[in-house]
Length: 246
Image (cartoon, rainbow, N blue to C red; front, side, top):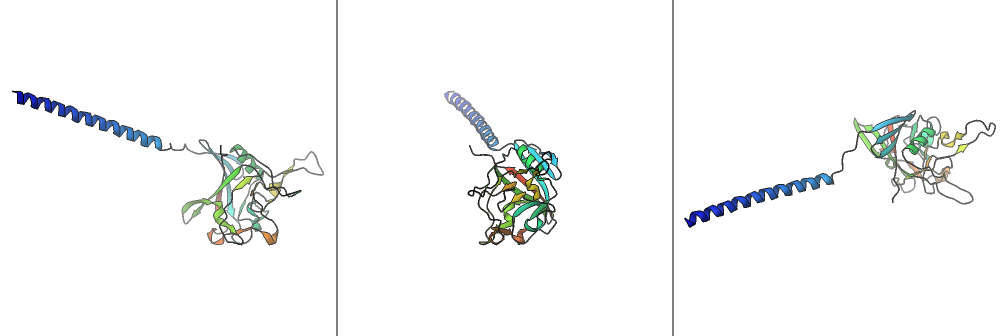
């Protein structure tokens, strides 16, 4: 009698213990799943594009803002003064050209949260261009596949043949009043071709924050020919302001 009672008690304890283990295991599993879920960033919402001007759009995706410029390859070999120029201006010294009004890119960058600084100053002493840092990516089709790369992969240093590794800053170019008609709308200097520069120009919209000569014998950068797709290849130039570190 005592033996059967003891067996029943032990059996009941064993069942309770197993139930407790199962329940504890389920709780731990849920905790692990919750932890995993919290470690994964939520997916970005769908991107919306707002047209700012011809071949210039502002992409809005949650808190993310990017400027999209539709361009094309206009040069694959030679020394560079610009990376992106305006169509029918300085295609002989830029890898990309775009049929744009540079003022539209300027406006889109402001809408994306970038802050225009100041173009380079040469006198009385050299002061580099300033402004928000702008990350530039290139998107294009290569053998039927969409490729996205940093803009610097298409350029290299002229002397050391080392891949370009610099950020641009939003210098903002300058407005030039008409000397013969004060009532006429000022001219935005970057529309002469200095949209995204690799040599310093006081008319540049985007420039390098380092000294980079525009003299023919001292040009710092050249096209990385073997990496650049054929002439006329459509390229989406993506400009993204880099948030300031707190």
